[in-house]
Image 1: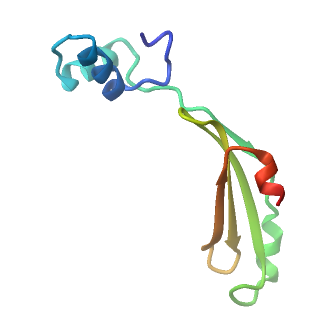
Image 2 (image 1 turned 180 degrees about the horizontal axis):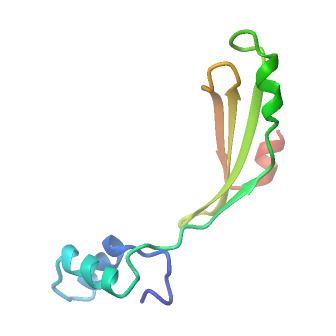
Length: 108
């Protein structure tokens, strides 16, 4: 099962086995997967874009310089989604964010 679904962790494997009628404890599944080297599912991420660290010296207070971070992440139900965050350079707080399954939504 882990060859077909490399992102499955012990919780999901336990749920699938129970649906198939196998009485199994999640701790045993975790131990077996760990011993077989399967305890850590592959998490796929892609970093898109580069931020300019030099702009931090220009901010003399909050809400003067903002930066944008765009990250792509894999979500099982949606596929690749774009996560965009606008960050205030002064205190590194997130001013706003958007999660979109399509790039066209980000252009609006």
